[in-house]
Amino acid sequence: MRLLVLLPLLSALALAAADGSCQCPQVKCPADNAVVLCQCLNTRETICHNHCPDYVPAYRPCPIAPPSPTPTPTQSQSLSLSRSLPSTSTDRSPTCTCHPESCPMIWPESCYCQNESIKKCYETCGGDEPVCQSCALQTSLRTLARRVPSPISTSLFPSTPTPTNPLCGGGRGNYTPCPTNFTCIKDPLSPSPGCGPECDGWGICVSTKMCGGFAGVKCPQSEGKEMLCVDDPRDECDPVKGGADCAGLCMYRA
Image (spheres, one colour):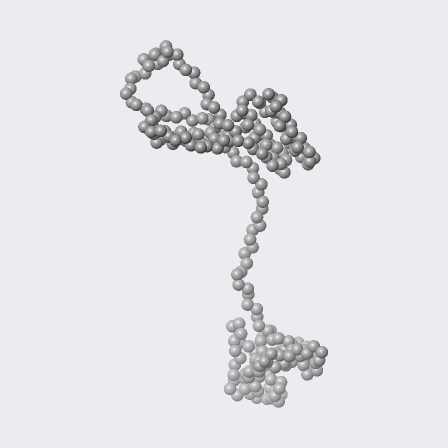
């Protein structure tokens, strides 16, 4: 009988060692008790998985351990016991019949299930106080955990870009015009503006809407800041050369 029990164990160990990556330790299980044998084989699977993480354990359902037999008292012992105990007329017969509850056929879940079932039956129907079985501590098997990356908090709305003056001008082969209602001028705020679009250089596009002049027209607001009013190079009025109340054009500040 022991040889028949060890054959599946040896074959499983041989398969685990066949790939050459990891070898499970040998475990000897007794064959004289079916419940103990089943629990030992399941423990072997757990030990093999802990030793070889890539090994997939194959657990099997174990039968419920039968309760330990209680000795039947002899007639003389029953008579002496009845004489020593005071007589009582309390009837401990159950008042109803409990339906059997289906429990999983694996240890120790089956033991916990049976104990819970007889407790519920005693609370509902009464009778003699039940004696629960002693179950092994219920421990959870190891599970492979994976690391989940933490989300990075970002703003749901992108930041509003600061408006700028688009480029214009350039050489004749790659000349860039301005959109409608805009004109191309030399950048007055550039540290080295050069000759600008007048000699095929780069310039900036500004709105053709007038600012300054006799009426002192102000430029509109942009991002909470007032736009800058610069001299209009298209007229002959130049404030640098003594011109007064010259009209200008609005451009974005750098």
